[in-house]
Image (spheres, helix red, strand yellow):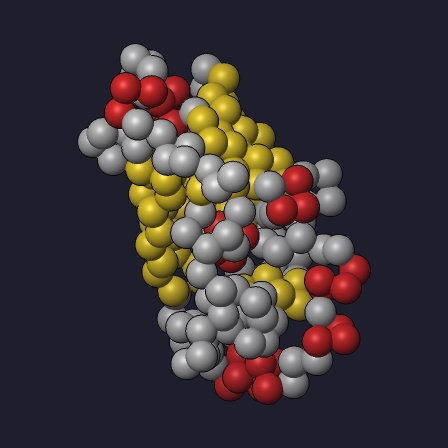
Length: 198
């Protein structure tokens, strides 16, 4: 059966960032016919044009990276433990455990998801990530909106800024992000998604 959105009376009385805890459904945007929304420079366009599905990290089970992982039509969970947040994305069982102390922290032993700093500003959780290793689909995967038909690589200059904010009724989680990589992009890309609480 299809998962049903939560109702207002199912929301707990927890306040602050603890109210973000729960299961969320991403909107699920697959590749678009009109191509990637990313502003690719000459190197980015060349990489996109040279895309070979046989060389895709999908074939070696490398997880998609952020923020593109949130574009996929899957569930994710948020857990809050005091001054720490854990985000578990369903595909590839990706866990990011992030202290909200604004101190640099590597969320995976292999460094695949970069070095992250987390903090809280008002009712918003802000995550800033950098020091990603290069990836053949670090900026976008062929099946998701950012790639839209071709994997788009990232470099060591990739940076991601993520902002999570609850709607007034607590039933939606607003996700705003900025994706930067001057090796392949002419300018940062700003994205916006709204997740539904289940």
